[in-house]
Length: 308
Image (cartoon, rainbow, N blue to C red; front, side):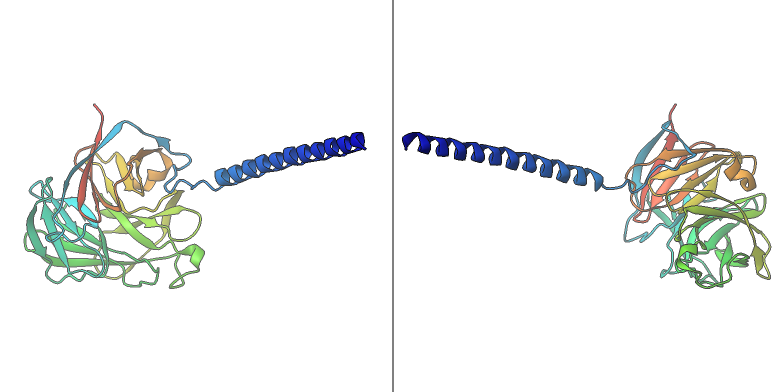
């Protein structure tokens, strides 16, 4: 009887041990599975690098100053002024004003643009003719049919002309959700023409390039010249003084194109310069052939400088 009890006890102990081992193994498997799932759920890079663009780490980004929120409520574009300072401006929902600031972010002048209306000013450029040109082409919903570039005399502070235009490839207002690619926040001027770069709100990451002639009067119908895929949305554009480099401002990156003319921008050498955390950057202007000043919407100024 005693030996029988011993046998039963031994058997039960064996069963308990096997069960414990099995439970431990299942726990390990479940832990491993959970870990794998967590790894699979890792956050995607919000601003990934763009395929086909070489990463250029030869630039330093320095935060230089901040504009006063009470004096300059918003910075949506950035351009050099005639006296070596900078003009910036707000976008939709604000007055038709330009703010002149210095590199330290100090407000030097507020220009109330006579005859102007800020439907949605998204960028600013200076022409070889000395006039300022405001890109009234913000089009978040892709519904606008009154897009225009506004010509401003810096001396008289007046609107002296408008250049209306429309996109030949847009036939619906708005188009289907996947085709929302008619918003522009970055443009530049070169050889008496304007070059517009779209902010794609649809699918495919395609940035389209359009050319608008500097011809006030009847609305021009413009065809897309070219396109390139960029993984972040474009919010500003400029061309270097020597005309050899075009810079597009994206989210967390500045994209640099080497080309003989803006029409050929997407066909030449393409680089991307990492910016890190700069907030919602919306203004960019070349200060020489290599270095750029950048502003974010809240008025912080950065200098993007080529390393010596």
